[in-house]
Image (cartoon, rainbow, N blue to C red; front, top):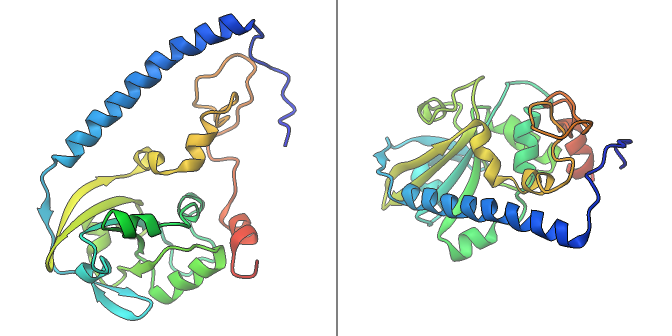
Length: 231
């Protein structure tokens, strides 16, 4: 859909464009190398042993160690939740709706990626179906798990990573807020576009389209209309 925006990047000849692109590429390559170094440091982080939590899944109570489903590594997205609400956090709903093909993680990387929410499991599973989410959901409503991994009830969301050694589970990494962005393919694609995310906090040229942060994009109801169980 057109933005109706008349502001455009300057038009130059191909040689000038290539020179500007090459200059940007220097910074992009430096950022790639820095991200590689950060990942290397992440792989060297120490870890902390966790208690033997019991969560609830579609088939009833399940130990945290068993949520790995035989894998040694587990990524958990802690989904914000408000008990009894028809539509949950649009950011969490939109973020998790992107993940529809996780088989490669399980088949080749000895890992699983699931959602854990502080909401009751019956509501969580019904919401999963309503918005067309494909991931496995678990509830920590009867456990301190959410609060213990920095995603307490009625407050937080985030990503946590765990490592299993036998029946012992360790917490290895955590992020929240904008730290989750690198897992989102949508924001990565939008950041390539000339107009970017069009949010008011971003540094853009004069005349570029901008709007208040979080004021655009699909809400949970719109996601359900596109991907939900009735579609």
